[in-house]
Image (cartoon, rainbow, N blue to C red; front, top):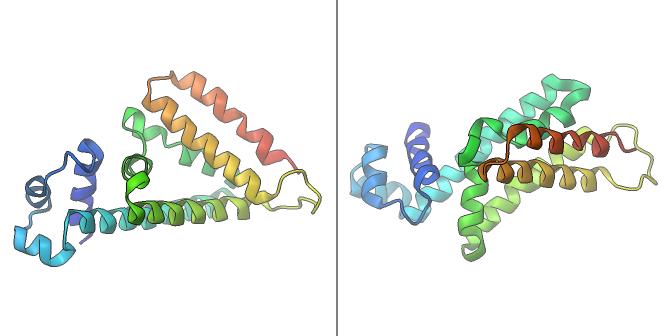
Length: 179
């Protein structure tokens, strides 16, 4: 199932949801139309299944990264969230949520759940020894760091040079270090 959903994701990433036909999906996924509709019900169904699979996979990777990075987890997570390996294609999840979320409640809900658990992971890494009266809570800082990381993806996607993006991401250290 993972390889079938991965094939669908690649098409959605390259073409977007609207421009990806069921014929292209079934060909890439190696499925007949009857099997496709039997397994997923619709193009929307395969999109949701593929996005959930992707969300679970990348989140598990971020959890491992945080565990391995120890005290450096917040910085490591911000740089991982900025996804430089995606280059000008941007983040698949962010692309689809941006494209579909405003008029697709199921995609918007999946996006909110994904971003909420990433925020919770990052906030957990930020808690440390911050006093209760810190100007920003760990969750506030996590949300700001996520906005910075996802903004870096948009900058990269629009062709901003990597040095400028790295300088912007360096500002994350101010939020990470604020106690």
